[in-house]
Image 1: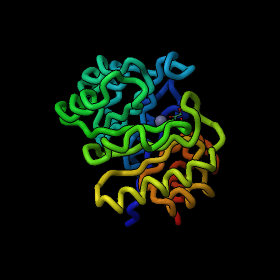
Image 2: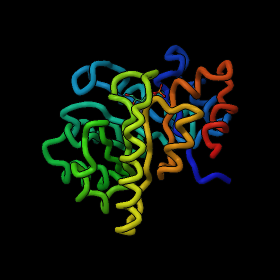
Image 3: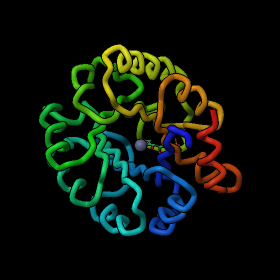
Length: 219
Ligand code: DX5
Ligand code: ZN
């Protein structure tokens, strides 16, 4: 079995039937469900919040990988934990006190992820790497699905993977934005082990989700 996990982003799903879309993803072999939460402030787009996540919870037993693109994030963390998030990923720019937001997510017994925008250096979270579960490397500027992959992030993934190996620490490396059947191989070779994908999963091969999930895992 492949050690690469696929986290389909429901941003590209049919919002009129999110429940059945999530169900389809699970049946097609998705490893987790990536939920993009946008506030129209940290990013120039608005999506869904805790009540929708809570309503979707019963449609799948897969982990909900909740990517919070909201600021200030801290006061909302608990709402997302209660709504049914399993992994809560935040951007360091969205909290006044990164350590305390990390600790809050841990206290709520959720996995903690930190996300780096294309222009945010690894240095911004270097001292937190040993206390988190996941780093989400953005390969587009967050806000919208369907954007073009920024190739420079491949080196960033390599750099992060080198730090991980050198310091012998364990965390997942997840990549998000513009992932397709070509660059998937590049990011996996660079050290990523979780791939987020919206457009490729839902639109390629006439929407054959299973085929698209399987193809993204190929190396
Ligand atoms: C961008 C989101 C991504 C994105 C992925 O802000 O965080 O999850 O929707 O979608 P594609 O694969 O279409 O880039
Ligand atoms: Zn995302």
